[in-house]
Image (cartoon, rainbow, N blue to C red):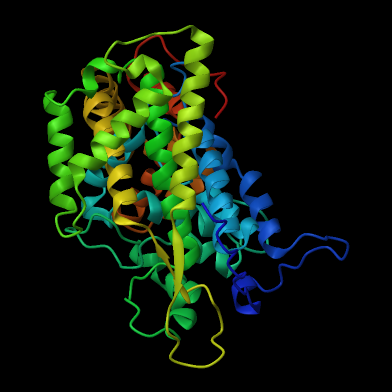
Length: 437
């Protein structure tokens, strides 16, 4: 195969490197670029550090092999860097965006998010990507000069997957209180591009989104094979979960012209070729061999999904726009999108919908709901919170603002902290006056 021509680098301009607080200047001897400084701020933030105790798919603490939100974010950043090098984007910018992409996720994985969504329906909603914005611009503490981390426009806009406000019927949104930040981050750049949708993502955000999709699919598949949720027996055509996965992907990509059955057959053959334990014979091999096989499989798939994508230029309405972040569009071949979606559906059917995971998810939902309701309805709620959170609750002027404070507090918890908080509130003989909050 001939070597693909290297794409020219995208230009990042002064507009992309501006911060909300303009008095935030680097030290004279700081040799880092603005995007490198952003990456450092994210890595050193408490919210990023707490991701190590938050569930990805398998509960944090179930074993030292399985991924947490932290390891997932690091892997997304690594894939994102590979895509940036392939597509001419700034690697430091993309890494920073990827590292922030899950920073607003609550404990207990997607179950925790769905429960907070339900609880916050009447109070302006909850959405993990919207919560990213609150953490990066309000909740995280870096300096007394400004709130949040005061990231550059390019990095901040790069994690804005959605740009519309809250409505009860919308699954994805930005909190209404933060819409002015969306305008600051992207409007000048977007209006320079022809035929661009109002909620369009920047090119850098599209790279992050694809890196997340790839990491989520491939690494969750690896974890699932390791945990024996996916083995040779369940990759058969007649398994109803396999059939329903194929049927759902067919419906989703009905207009693409892709032969979903053929894509699944190829994917299954590749899984079996790279990992003999998935073959019809179920050849187990040694433990060391299986580990190496899984790693070769994940490397093979990730390389394919990085090298398959391309970029095309958009048409500018004006000459010399303030930014090139909206001047390109990510192009993903439909067959590749179908394959990644098939992996996600299979993991969903065999792992996330399994009784073992569902039982843990229900427990997580119960913990979140119980703590939320206690803090919202309890007359003594102010005294139940740590000191720094008491300040937020004390200045809340209405029920909606109180709910947002409680939601912020719970969503920032690790799985373990949420369980301990629940135990202290509801279980006898648990907790002590010497507990440190």
